[in-house]
Structure formats: structure tokens, C-alpha cells
Length: 251
Image (tube, rainbow, N blue to C red; front, top):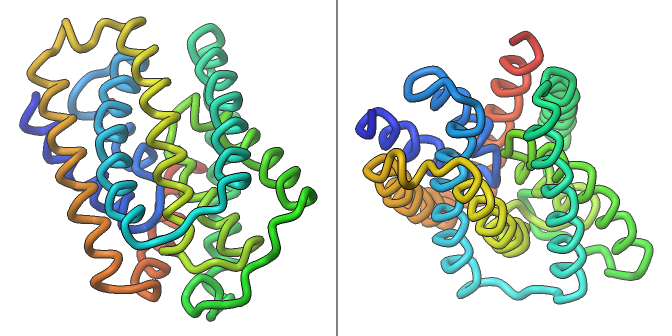
């Protein structure tokens, strides 16, 4: 069980850290399919890997890029609130079909839009100025997508697209916000889930494996970003959005 879960974690976290998100959308269904069928246990195991992936990615990006503190705080606070709401919903009202279809439609639509927007996210542009209107829009957007993050995770890719489309950053520039924000959110949510499910005590070897493989996948995927550049990140993001969106929408 641990070997299969570890291979899944390395693949998912490497792909997610390279493309800018969607790690859980790849990993969570595979964990449910091949490792364990209990929703909350599988979600917790999945989140353990994403915690270490986002921490590894954050450390690498922090050395290279600068951050706007008000924008970062806005995404963090709204992300924590949204994730808390989503975690509550899935814990007490475990019916995620509608939410999956909403997320799937969003991924497909944004993926198609990005495919026809040749230069967005690839070449540096004049960044949008961060005023109060942008902060309000960022708060509302982040709050909404992080409700979905609390339910099944993987919405970091949508935050990446917000930076690319609205704030006019490149894909890699957006990671200095996406990865640290989700590192903090995932640590808090995963701590709660571990306390609730007791996964670490039930499956200690599995938990250690997911942590180590998540860390390894995050390091590999993030370094590949800087090696391959924004063009390749965009290509992988497009494929991930389209494939995951279609799979989620049609079940």
C-alpha cells in the first residue's frame, strides 16, 4: 500500500508543483482508487503529501522572487476561511458531485482560454497595480475557490490562473504566492484532518511515505520549472486542466 501511494505522490506532486497546482486533483482520485476507499482518510493522506510539496516549492521560489505583502495576506486570510468552510461541508455534508462539476467546468473553460491566449503567462508584462479593488477581487475569488480546496483540494491551479490573467504575471512569478499560501493553508487543514481521522496513528508508514514523496516531488517539479521556463509550464498546465476537467465532469 505504501509503495503504490508513494509512486502516486511523487508523480502528482511533481506534476502539480511544475504546473502550478492541481496536485490533489491528480493524487486524491488515485489514492481513493488504489490505496484506500474511505473519503476522509484518503483526503488526509493526500493532504500530507501536498503539505510537504508546497513547503519545498515555497523555499525554492522564495529565494528567487519578491512578494507583495498585502496581496499575500489577502490570499492567505480568504484561503483559510474558504478552506475551513469547505472542510466543514465535506465533513458534515459529504456530497461533492456538484462541486466537482463546477470545478471541472472552470478548469476546461480556463484551459481553452489559455490555449488561445498565446503570450499570457509566458512573456513578462507590466503587472497590474495592487490597489484596494484588486485586493477585494482577490479576496472574493480566493474565498470561492478555497471552499472547493477544503472539499477535495487541487485549486492552486485556479489561483495561478488568477495571477496570470488578472494580475498579468508569468506562471512562475505566480508561484511565490500560490505555493506559500497553500503551504500555510495545508499545514492547518492537514493538522485538523490528522487529529480528526487519526491516519498517522492508523497508517504510520503510509504517512511517512507520503511526506517524503511529497517533498521529493515538490523539489523535482519546482526545479524543472526554472529549467524549462514558462512556456513548458503553460503547456503542462493546459494538459492538466483539460484532462482533469474532462475526467471530473464526466466522472
